Image 1: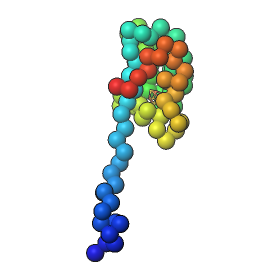
Image 2: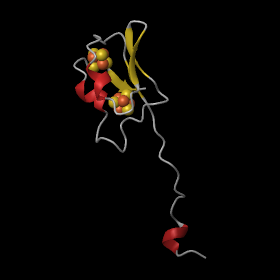
Image 3: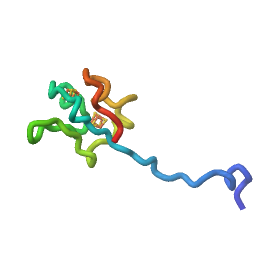
Length: 80
Ligand code: SF4
Ligand code: SF4
């Protein structure tokens, strides 16, 4: 039998990671975000910048805040 403190604690599970997205309607295609992404999740395709949700980690474990959102002058890097 576990001590009470352990018995009452929730099982640990991997923290879920969401992704950021670029609001295309507000993006000015300045390119500032692309160079800042530590995971190369941002690319310019078909005339617009977009975030690959499979690569985006929200910068968790790498920076204290999402780097794309930090540098975006149009505030269009937002949680998906
Ligand atoms: S939140 Fe971080 S990992 Fe995701 S696209 Fe922006 S810079 Fe890249
Ligand atoms: S920094 Fe913002 S405005 Fe510039 S390309 Fe990225 S999403 Fe678009």
